[in-house]
Length: 344
Image 1 (cartoon, helix red, strand yellow):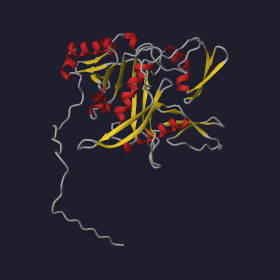
Image 2: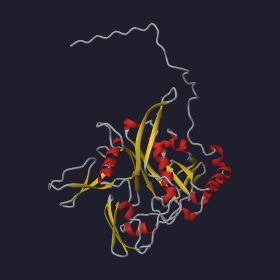
Image 3: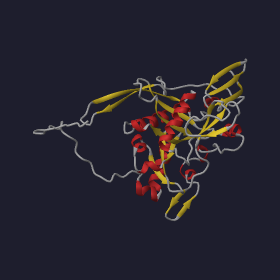
Image 4: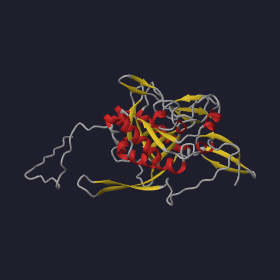
């Protein structure tokens, strides 16, 4: 089995890995950065069908049956155009005059240009996407591509960002702040050593070896919301972490969790199977999804033994309105007249 001798990461979408025997493997920079010199790596999958691949997503009619069908492809962001599409999606959610969503670099003068859209450098050089603001060198991106589309439809419908666990997490309770709450529930080595930043990001990445992953962001194109694409991205990310140990791929993953304020108002994480455990010290809810029986046992024990967790029972979203019975059939209009007049 070949040994990794070195790596070069030029962009998120372009990297090279040098193997013993003088073989160069070209791949995305996000994949190449996790291969450490001296390692021998073999990928073994348990599922016959690839986790990342073609999907068909059915939109059901309110009266039952199929309304229409999307043909999609879920995959890791690999090309420069994928990351430019991610920056474009960020504009729908976070961009403003004060908040810039991306950093670009001029290939001629190497000047860094903060901008929401691809800018023009004063020197006339081409700007290339350097980084999505808010992400880290440890981040990996999953995109949902619309394979069969009309000319006016976007190529990328949404994306999900998967990160290693944050270094520390505390819980807010009525009595105050409870420090390092995760390590009270699950084994400490599931979350450490994780990515902690620093000037030498390559050494920081080489230290990462965790049994948990964090969903840092889920963004869907505004024209395609309420279609179930956010939940679909989350389900694919769970299988990605389960099968390939994403984001770093060095250890079996027991957990995937997310810190999501929007989960209070939109329960799509809970619909996928996430369980609410606690609020962070800043008041944001944290939801966990166990990937193994061992993680499930730790989670259930906390929900049964912790007094605050017993009170909410692992459930965050509480609907304000009860269920409304659905229509038994189509609505028929009788004795209705319509008039239309146009003035030019």
